[in-house]
Amino acid sequence: MSVKRIGIFGSTGSIGTQALEVITTYPELFSASVLTAQNNHELLIKQALQFKPELVVIGDENKYTLVKEALASTNIKVMAGEIALEAAAGTDCYDMMLAAIVGYAGLKPTLKAIELAKPIALANKETLVVAGEIVMQMAVEKRIPIIPVDSEHSAIFQCLVGEGRNKIEEIILTASGGPFRGKKPNFLVNVKRDHALQHPNWSMGAKITIDSATLMNKGLEMIEAKWLFNLKPEQIKVVIHPQSIIHSMVMFEDGSIKAQMGLPDMKLPIQYALAFPQRLTNNFKRYDFRKPDTLTFEEPDLKTFRNLAIAIHALEKGGNLPCILNAANEIAVFAFLKNRIGFLDITEMVERTVNKIPFIEKPTLEELFISDGEARNYAASLVEM
Ligand code: NAD
Ligand code: MG
Image 1 (cartoon, rainbow, N blue to C red):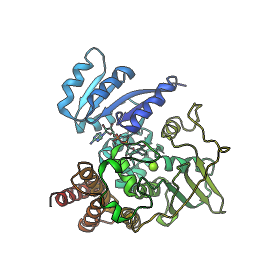
Image 2 (tube, rainbow, N blue to C red):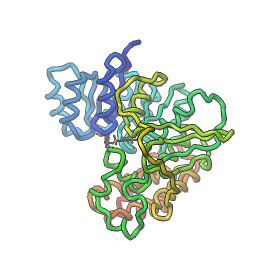
Image 3 (cartoon, protein in one colour):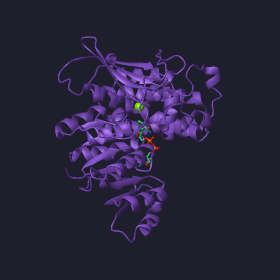
């Protein structure tokens, strides 16, 4: 088997660095042939010197010279800027894209990769939240697989292997509940950035960690699941499972339920997506059923974690609403991380933006780009008030 060249878009992040660990373990299977980062030029340079990719992209153009000079003795091509990301996605320097950029910024490079019929290992859930219908349609036309990296979706994907045309009754996405499970608004109103950044089970990038604390992450994942698995909104359920051992479940039309389980470790869904349909041997820690443990399940508290309720509304209504929701949420989370707004203001900003921006039932890609911009501007104006 020849080495699969992975283009890691977002190589300096939580998913990107864990993907590089996987690649290090299987040099006979994978190489990292494209690496991209937004700001962290030091880590990007270090990764480039270690993995010798064909191409690196630094998003922040001011850092181009620094990266170029550091890699002057190599034959690694260096590009910079937002446009360069799409340009890099449009090269023949990789066989599969690992879409590991955070947020809306991941959409355009991923679209470019699909246009060139490159298979996608998709961590960037925002891509499907913003433009799921268009992205999946393009993938079908280009006959390329979109293999989920998000642990819940990887779980469902794994449960569906071998099921052919067997009908899904519903899927059950599990959620840890985040650091504030069981808390009420009178507690949440005082929550600060550093506390919200402490997730009980997973170590992830800042944005998704806040999304997990507000439960927006699960809302985004419901929308992601709708497009990935071609489901109706009412077929997508969420259950809080604080131990994060069951990563998600599928119930089939005969009532049989399949679950995918294991200790929480993102390297597993990453390596599964890169190597699919093969499973690879590894030495990750195993879950031990002989040790006393209790797996528990409860309903999400939609009254306290209203972000999830708003996201479910966007899932049901469709059109450009998920795109608006996502844009407002990105602005709000960023403002919260900068200590500019409180924890509950995130929901307030998302709700006001979703109610403000004009609804489009069947948006084109261009219209989605416009809705994204409008939602960002409006949400940002709320921060400044
Ligand atoms: P992160 O913040 O740790 O890393 C983000 C990466 O994207 C970095 O390499 C950064 O340089 C790059 N980036 C950030 N802004 C950019 C921009 N504007 N343009 C270009 N590049 C930019 O994020 P993460 O936790 O690794 O998450 C990446 C994606 O994977 C997100 O969409 C997240 O929802 C999804 N995801 C992450 C996890 C996890 O465990 N971390 C699990 C499931 C899904
Ligand atoms: Mg997830």
